[in-house]
Length: 154
Image (cartoon, rainbow, N blue to C red; front, side, top):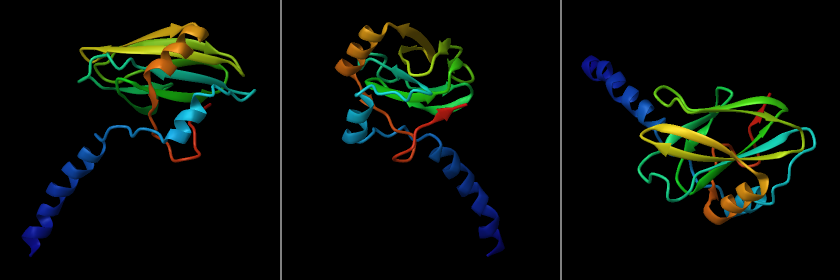
């Protein structure tokens, strides 16, 4: 019996590590529709980060904003991040050296197109009209927060 208990960590640790590899779930239709209304709060900015469905189908990368985890990006998906005004840094981790620094203002909406090539993210700020049209044409909301919750960056 003691031998079996000693082996328990050998099973728990790999399961815990695998649970962190789960991909970001798709948002509900209601949340997707709400995000695509492009409404912002007067005190915060909204940053939409999206990937074309044609972008490297096998490549996913993890999106961070100011060292805060947003989620795993997938082709044909987008995240909406509400952020306090100021300079914001979009980036990956480890070998992913892609970075975009963007100054955001309250009440404004920003669009960022993301492509991934060989594990490196490339962020491109898009004009509002173009970014909005591209996002509506290609993408569904990826959800990584509990329903009714949005990440607010301070």
